[in-house]
Image (cartoon, rainbow, N blue to C red; front, side, top):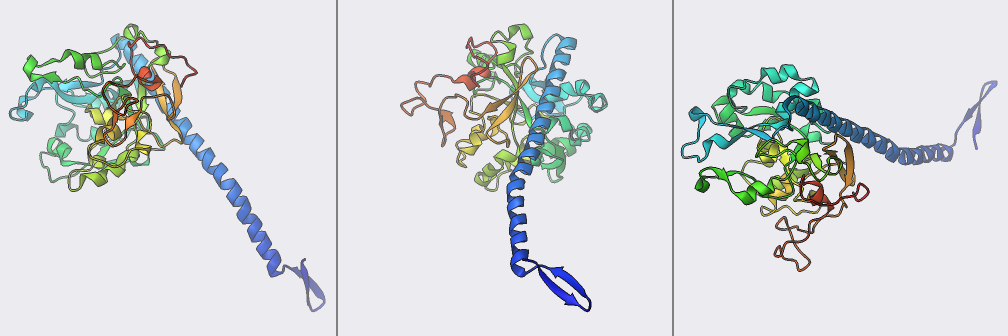
Length: 362
């Protein structure tokens, strides 16, 4: 009850201590009720921006296809004798520019694309300025460590600056091309005359691969049920740095938009989505952290399908079981042999696996 205090001929109303405390408690309750709603609204806005980014990438991929007659390759390759590592086999297959670099003219970044010296490797010091430019379309707002520039490890500084002691601030991405649903990379084999082993060639069964450009007509599983680009959060795998000791951290090695190296801009549906939430920090399961699609959106991640649509796929989507210590799939008997049957998630990663996937199953 408000109390009255008399000052001369005037009465002034005041509040008792109990009344003031009640008001404070009510305000606290209101804040507690409203804060989750505010946070949810902000997350919804970030997720919507991420969805829009992927839609822009979808438009860019199809614009590229319209001009070139095929989807972009996951990466280009480079051979430069002046920069060749002594004794490196199959030197003409050195990974170079990423598919995101090829898409720059189609996301209104033609000046940045034209600034690349295409006569040199993307890692050449002449291209260091380009690689230090952040592209907003390539970054999910929830992937906070991908915002702005990050220090790159000396493996990049060697190329950019010719001086391993000089750090480079480089630009990141939150998105990777889906190269398939297998863990094997399709690198050329020196023992085969630098040809790709057939089993590895077959493993490159995604839409944007490291082996050859793909045409829409070869996506026989259906454009609307084949994943083309997924989220892969840089922020998510930072805990793995603990396991590396004095070795270069993943934070400084991985996630650059310009680089066609697998752990930078290519991922695989071999690993379940957001597996990092269940994986322990081990040196044995590193690939599951780095090559597995991931996001900091609650309960799932955004996926760009081959038809240009974007789907939010829940992390509970049907997938094969994973040995969390080793980061490999295991069957009902707990062994990788025989291999377990592929799940819906793995089926989404292949362009020609022959799986039948309904749109309401993921």
